[in-house]
Image (cartoon, rainbow, N blue to C red):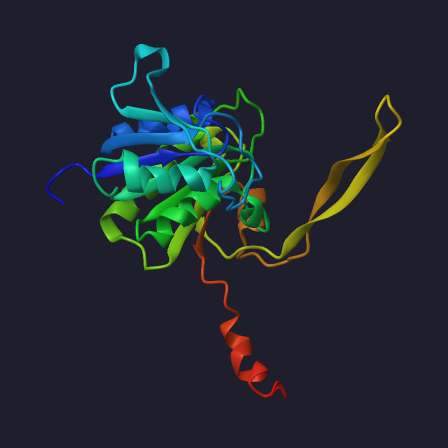
Length: 258
């Protein structure tokens, strides 16, 4: 590539989140940057898109310190990527990075994640994409230990490329920089949320529900993202958005469905 790569940066925590501000700074050392991100938190939105209302995108300059183009979008993370590619970007981005998310997107969380849905949307459009997450939900999370790993993985994707239909899901353990043991290429762990709904009442006496629960790892394998993170490694999982259970097609063809 003779010119600096054009990198689209987005997230689901909102354009003012410390995680995306860190990611922007890292990407500026690698290429030219355009930012299109939600104007408010969109965590847990999955691959939702806006169909029943208008979308707005406002060019902003946070603290008057940014040289790159930045747009604050009223939509979801997937909306942001769609709008960036079709309208706001001067050309098709060479790479899309999403994050750095405040909190885990390992294992089953990838299904619910707005961070990863933005990366997947870019992948659908044929753009190499990476979702980055730090296992710290605090707004003032310390992203210092993430920086070197984010840069290394990004530079490798730009150099090596990704197969069509594949994006990377990268999770970084919440440990001091010197305690991260390295990078592990992993599979997604078999794990899920055991959920409960806390039933409450409004002052007017109407019932409402608050989702609670705990995350349960059902996978004892040492080749999973959960194992890597629990043992101080950055996990990298290649994710495909073809949801077909290819192995079951032959069996399904034996059913009497005529």
